[in-house]
Image (cartoon, rainbow, N blue to C red; front, side, top):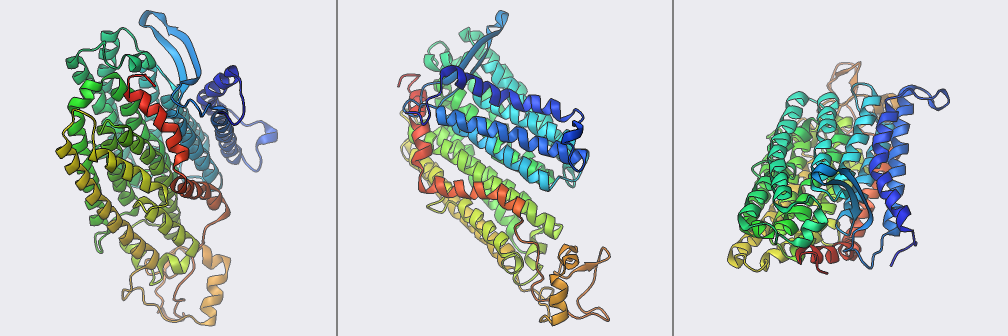
Length: 575
């Protein structure tokens, strides 16, 4: 069934357009803007160009989804097959099925929302021309990763995103951005070198790099020893990008230093490339090798779940001077642990749970990083102790809609039933209860119990964050005197609303904080107001919140796409 009947040639064009258009847009972003399109200034023109290109890609992706045959999601659709390097039998092969289509939509949506957000809130740093061009190259590489069907092309697309993300962190990031950027690229490049060796081993031993043909063969053309070596080599590269404990240490630094848009794309899109590789390459192409390493993958996954949660609890405690962005980054280590656990079960239930958790994490964590970036812009810091001690009412009293949305994103992240975060974790744990034939059931049930314990730890640190940031803590520094008329009038003026905030919630005059008891001044209001959610923020955040609810209430929309494709993948290409 297709919502709209679109011809195969149009579907091919749409998929090629989705992959290539951001690259062409990146080149155009670096060119001078035509005089009639400059608007108020060239910077505004190039930011508007970013919104236009990413919007066009999003529309094309939606049309692709509308024309997709939902009755046969296990069949590769919108396929293109063009010879590129005949000597190596490398071909430009594109196609989508029920596994890759949701990831294409997620990537196109998040990139468009980031461009829309940046149009009204450009990141501080060098010229927006380079910023927009890098975001578009990043989008093209990510979309290509999910659309290509040739192993060497997959590797090229996989690597294509590294340089743009490096410069986004190094040039537009915050404190320690150079060190964080170098750590990011060194970890991922080293992992990629090992991954390339594994890809070449598969191609040389099987005689082809065609991912569909290799998946259909289901490892029958590869000996067990070759499969084991290939899974080890490719798995290391994918595990670094995922990231899997203990190869995760680049992630907190990268997230802490990255600009808001960089964090959203890193968490919402780039991490999915690693888990997608496990599902698309290792599960169907080297099943015997995966079966050998599945218990170890599951063990590392559950350690990551617990480790990420304990790190978040340590950052969230009073007096730890924990950074809220760093906390959300560590939470990603735990959430991606559930994805890896689902993949390690090698069952349709577990893999479907992993794919669902992938999408849910992209929506929820993308929203969380948007919110944390907005909070940091308003307070000038993401330090939890400062945010909690700013005033007794904290966000609920100072920016209630912002506080409510942060609380919503937090409870979605902890897996509340009825929201997107619930289904992926539940299906993953069900898959671990009954793993694939040949895997140790007692071991995986132990992993299931540890993972379930991790969900309790996740709830603990998320609720602590909501209590501290949204409700605040009554400390001697935050007990401000009752307001008087002049304080209320001052708080209502635009100048007061835009003034920097001191750590105790009082306004700063002429760039410096003034204590509420300074001579000649009256005490500040009990709950000095911050700017609440702005129109451009609502436009960028509302789709993520709405889709989080929709996926939670109607999971069949996503599972109906992924399940037939997963069943075929695990059966060796047989429906």
